Amino acid sequence: MGIIVGERINSTRKRIGQAIRDRDVARIQKEAKNQADAGATHIDVNAGTNPDRELEDMLWLIDTVQAVVDLPLSLDSANPAVVREVLPRVQKTPLINSISGESNRIEGMVELVASNAGPVVALTMDDSGLPEDVAGRLKAAATIRDVLNKAGVDDDRIVFDPLLRPLSTNPDQVAVFLEAVSRLRKEFPAAHQICGMSNISFGLPNRNNINKAFMTLALAAGMDCFVLDPTEPGIMANYHAARAVLCMDEYCMEYIMQSREGRL
Image (cartoon, rainbow, N blue to C red; front, side, top):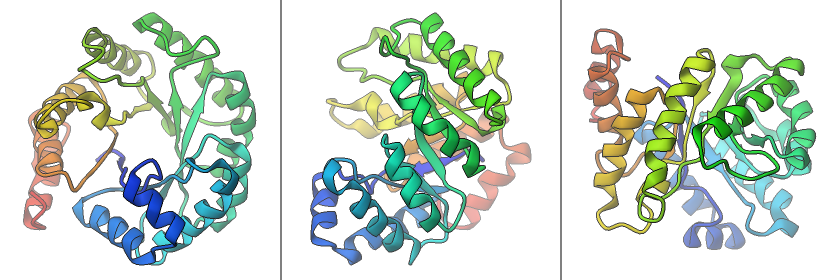
């Protein structure tokens, strides 16, 4: 099974942001436990909406979540100084989210990523922004990969994010995104791929239908990791069923195990 990052503990969500400000331990721990029970492999912690307090808030989130959930964290911060300060507080090797080809972002993160020994999300963008085409995404990915490889980070620790845009505003980008996933899989077979899956359905009604349909297409194209809400109805059942149908789950054992545990 690939990485499933539970996305709900993110300060951009209004109620979570308020819970962080109020130091509402019960609310944050409930979110963490619900996502773990639903099948997340990592729990995202994001406190970036208040840059002046990000370090303090992130440390509080880490302690609060780790007190009740025995899963690795996804350290969701663009600030290398914050990541550096919180790493000693983390109990299990985390996913670092994220690095990119932007010079001001890659320079500060490479040393941290190399010393962490865990996976890192690599956004396929550079100083010119998010490429509109497949070739631009591949070029950005290759640049980041070279830098990481030179720092001692092997491909199997790199998790490329081709950056998914909403279907409602960028319908032409869905085909580009899926082609980029397929090409990245061929170019860098040992690396992994991830996306913020809920981006696809932003602004649309009955988002769950779009999310599940897209997930199946993304898995077929070569994606193996997702940032998502594992408590969303049917989403984890769709994930395991699609992996079984696509022969990513040998003898459907993962699907059978999840069924026996009542998660489907």
